[in-house]
Length: 184
Image 1 (tube, rainbow, N blue to C red):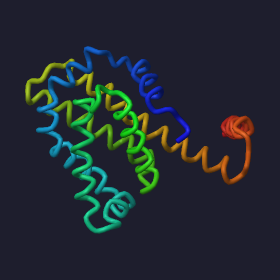
Image 2 (cartoon, rainbow, N blue to C red):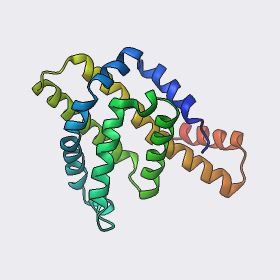
Image 3 (tube, one colour):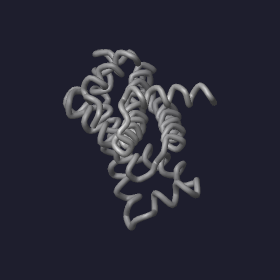
Image 4 (tube, rainbow, N blue to C red):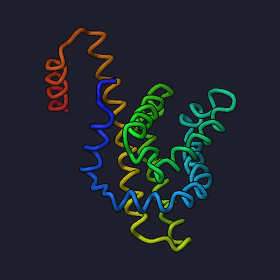
């Protein structure tokens, strides 16, 4: 692991503006979050299952979809509870989730729109359950933090693999990436 997960989490909290008030709002709605988590998992995996390539990844091994569904429920509920008040354990868990996405091949082009589906469906559910708008805002912030962990895992795994396999320095790698980006 090339990043310090807690420092990364705190940086992301600052960037998205996740406040102590947001955390309090999330915690006070944790039971509701657990209640709707299976429904959100259904939306998430229905969306992913409509794509042929993603459906193949999801069903690559017996029982994977069921396990992922259960994991999604835990993940969703943890956004409300913060596990350890959005501390070290939360950060490590989110990093691990990102690495797992990399390992099983769920690439960003699937993760980002699927998270969009979750945010959209949560918004509809919030309205139908007459939940306050502040909860949607707080949940949107923590969803973006979790998404950033997954995205950063791709960057870090790729960077680490290239540096390890080539023996390049970090500075050379950054220069090559910048040069490559400039040529696009």
